[in-house]
Amino acid sequence: MTDCKSFNRREFIELVGAGSGLLLVACGPVPPPPGAQAKDDYDWTKHYWAYAVDTAKCIGCCACMRACRAENDVPEQYFRTWVERYRIMAGGEVHVDVAAKDDHVFEKPAEGGDVVKAFFVPKLCNHCEKSVCNQVCPVGAAYNTKDGVVLVDRKHCIGCGYCVQACPYGSRYIHPQLHVADKCTLCYHRITKGMLPACVHACPTGARIFGDLKDPKGELSTILNQRRFRLLKPEMGTHPKCYYLGLDREVV
Image (cartoon, rainbow, N blue to C red; front, side, top):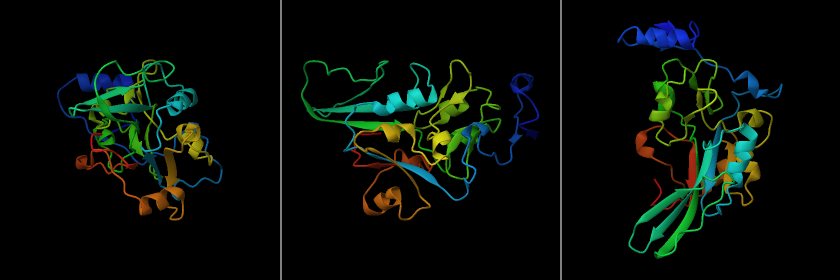
């Protein structure tokens, strides 16, 4: 058993490459990252953050994507959050595309074809209670905070990509400059100061909803108690904390 903080990235790679045996890594609880700069009175044991998306309100403007990129310095062609456009054809075919241009706008649909229904679905890290991404990390760099957020410790991440492959929601990537895993953090540096995530703040229709599940009278808790919602890939057993309101059956 090896302590994940007892060796650096190069030493880890050399150790793994030295043989075919399994390396077990033991890591203790990881505190909030220093860069979060939380408020002095912020107590991460008194909150449990979660997220909801009202798909009936999303208009596909992608203001959330632009806000996320600006707030978190996300590299071009990579996304911490994205918006998918679903087009259901008369024959039952489902066409899905993503606003991936630099200005994050959807291209006009191609001419031809009979579209009977179209809608937008924002996606992001589901901040699972039982994150499989964290389970496969060989150095304990991926972890859950006590306030319900899944984060990556960049100081210990070795960029192996195991978590990227394991995530059932496709929400992780390897940062092309930093060579570490990157993903949505729910703007942890903002929420620990009492602010909303950048994407929620930027949404003009209120399609994105952020809240504290430990607050029974909060907006998110109230919505989840009063309305029906769906989870993405519940069969994975990851217990995601991104709740979808009005989600069509074609979405996977």
